[in-house]
Image 1 (cartoon, chains in turn purple, orange):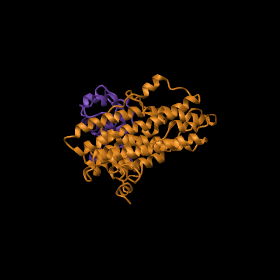
Image 2 (cartoon, one colour):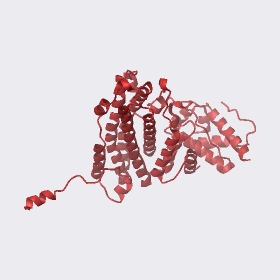
Image 3 (tube, rainbow over the protein chains, first blue to last red):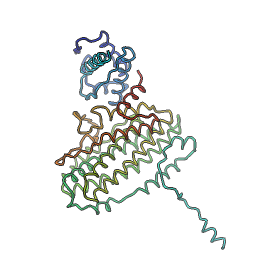
Image 4 (tube, one colour):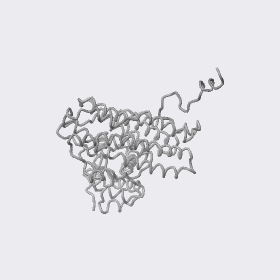
Length: 104
Length: 312
């Protein structure tokens, strides 16, 4: 299922987040986003994850990469494990744009 | 004075004069001071013996008819919460065993640390048995809803294994949460006998926290475990809507595999919730410093430090 990208999104950020998150989860982008799986399913499918701490770490690494390459610091809220990956991506993008605007 | 008299007056004792204490630098104790597992176990045994108390004696001092609805609700919650400790201790014993096997040839000092941890789990389990039975018995005799056998069995589900450092840090923070909760309960309890029980159990939990911190610190000191995993658990607890929020969180996960007691606290008719979040935050930051040597003073600093340690 395709994700709804928030308006005024910085070009390239969407695919950058998908790519980094997939890399840190040890899964392909298709495995993560094609079926819009939940975070619980991501943990279960990922060869790198045991539980939600590993998921938290994959988000943190993605956020750190964003900070390094785009200069924007994103802080994600605690997301329930039944959250679909499309919502995670949307939250990531919204937070990115919000922080980018706040830090000018 | 005969030779025999002189021998009697200088008779050596197997028990040292000093008070028993937790070995807080366990890695150095094994790696630098060459302490053996027999010696470390001896220290665990004498500390355990020095802290023993009787559930029967403590219960005898409670005036059952003086307990308020809030008191009874606190007792009921505590009893259910303590039910989940046995599977935690059983898991610790099993996981320590597998870590010993993993490290035995690669790093014998880490194997020793893990064996000391697995050995100590028997004292932890025994001490927690006091907590569970004292509260459940009190709840039962004061007419609170009985814990159904099905609930009892649900709450005994063994926790899934995780990285050992993360496990120990999570247990340290759980003990902090329990100790602060029981400490807060003492302020609303009127009956001296019941107050004494909560005080004793809180003191036990702090001692358990100290053990978990010591084992976790030893793993970090060994260089085989990374401080980032200690901070990950810190962030898991302290973040907005994190584990520290317990049953007050907007969304409590269905864990499926096991029961975390903090997900299931119920305020009942008294509406008293022993949160004390600032105190817990302060103690978690203190524990992280002892374990990793990195000083943090707030949940924001915990998150920042963890993000830095994680890298990209």
